[in-house]
Image 1 (spheres, rainbow, N blue to C red):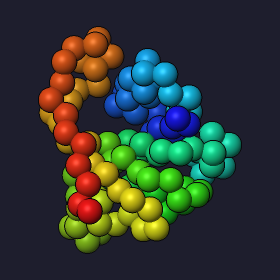
Image 2 (tube, rainbow, N blue to C red; image 1 turned 45 degrees about the vertical axis):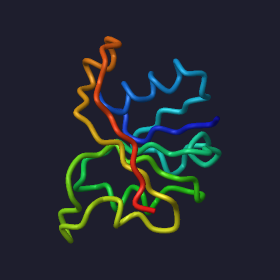
Image 3 (cartoon, helix red, strand yellow; image 1 turned 135 degrees about the vertical axis):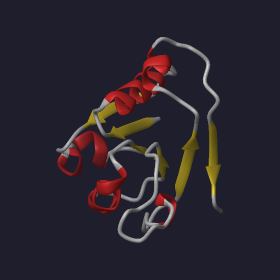
Image 4 (cartoon, rainbow, N blue to C red; image 1 turned 90 degrees about the vertical axis):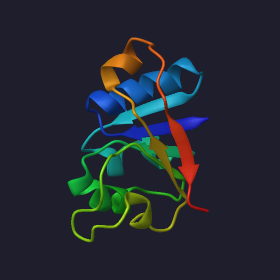
Length: 117
């Protein structure tokens, strides 16, 4: 599967590594994500950016691939859950606790993937 991880900080980089280890074709994108070919071609988008820019970033992403939300917190402008501010695509949420440094070390984590649908 073609996966794009948007957000090249510690958590996004760690998650991209996990997806790559599982055989996915992974693109890790930073600030150039809306213009990145790998993001446009992705079948799944994983977004790991700060909540203060989450709405803006997800609105700027091309295509209509589903999104896995890796970002913690609420939308600061509205107080809504981040899954409620994603428009035009399915939104799923990865819930922790997860820590980037532990994931990179291959340590077990307690994560749940959930959809509001």
